Length: 327
Length: 263
Image (cartoon, rainbow over all chains, first blue to last red; front, side, top):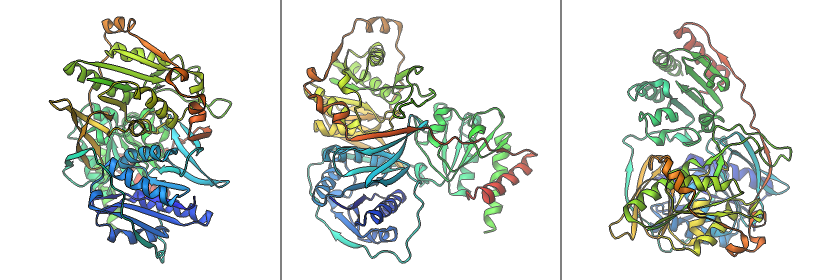
């Protein structure tokens, strides 16, 4: 057992950012152990994607390239990856946390008979063992954990916790094609329903603009979308806004929604209940706009303005438009 | 249809979390517990399917004495019976050990469909659903927001939330699905429901009655180890920017860009 292996994820023909982050984290570990960093991609037509990982420290890229893996299926990916991992025996296995990882990683860990440290915000080696920090209890506590039984030591990394710096020059990663072990896929994809416009993925976004009860209706979210458009941001919502039917549940940030970890989180008309903080408390900079000066969000925000968001948000949009245009 | 729902009892999401002197546990003396919110969607969906097809909904949970309250809550919602996995040997279980235990119990039962919540809000692992499906060898669909049973009751079609949209999947039964918010609106237990629940069976099973050896369960069966728990760094309240809206916004943009360097 040796080496660090990273499972890369592809979406819409591109490598997901969180996969590059996982490769960076893996590269950092492999440098310390003096072992190889291998990135594995599963899918179809993968050749053009292999080079990307050299920039983030991969020594080797394995392509499990087969039409059978063109579309994600739990059965297909678990059997192809488990067979490869059995053969290569990495000591550490990493993956970026995502909806796909939440589906794949636990089942893969169960098949490999190993533990899984999910949604980690820090990954280090301690006396040679993979050691992680993970937010638990709605981010109200941080657990320090290790894999104590089974191999490989498996962890998934929360988006935006690893800062990405491309290596210059990139590593010349060896590309290896491996014929995947196939098996029965029991589930059948009947349809994929895309949202109308291509949005920035909420969990990976570097800037998130969120609205809460103070938005008053669905219509008013337009001003947040305009602001988000200027910033290349994703739009989120509090539970109150989702339960009022103003936004879909997929936009909800919080303990019963998504966890976001952006550089900048702008909370508009959100009071800041603990359940909301569970979903955005690790954001690097938090801005709050709220009419209520007593709102708990101001206790967590780096910057706040007390006032009417219907006035303040359009002003902020204009001001940012000007500021960003100067660059 | 025979339906099994796996639930977890977790601290109330509004609870304040304090760390015990051991540094490995939270202080539980003042905590109130609830059924994990995502598991409520799982229970509700199971009840709705049973209402259409007849059959039985069995709720299973592992944990100390207090867990019987969580099971009782689901019986009051309408579940038929409960199984409480309770043994001091189960202490220190991680999600892996829990999945193995559940798989052992369920492999001795008849079932068409297993439902779990997509994730427990306390340990944030989202492990048990897919791992249980693996140990039982059944197909899975996670984070589902819609479930339709086929006319012949041999398959289900589910909608699941994926990045950028939704995926519609068909699975042959038996299968395991994990519930996401949006699947349904869980009912509250009615007073007659609560009265009836008092008479419903909760079968208590320990390691021996499940057929697991003591070294396969709890800490000994675990694959991950907690080294310590700590509180997150407290965020300090920052600046509230005073002034007229236009001025305040100007200053905010300056601070975001020059001080925080967030843009």
